[in-house]
Length: 115
Image (cartoon, rainbow, N blue to C red; front, top):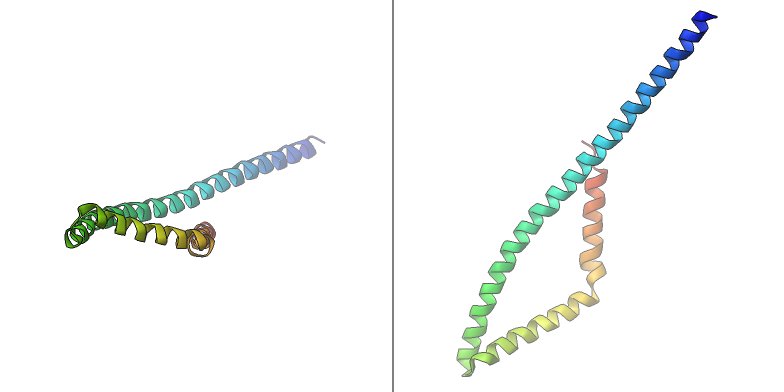
């Protein structure tokens, strides 16, 4: 009878260790996937900020140049602003197709990627 009790205790200890190890593995996998997704998004965000700064400075220069050609500096800014308004309307119309779906696919691909 004593042998039977130690066998059951051993079985419970192994089940407890297995559960603890499985929970730790799930936690570490979640941390790994999250870190991979966040680092990828952060690197893309950094590149996007640098590109945005380039575009901003180029647009200021282009606005000043167009304004100089038209004789009134503010007209260049109105023209460039109107172009951006048109671009924003187009982006809004196609936001799911051009932005939401690719970003969702990127995150899902990163999360399901096998090492």
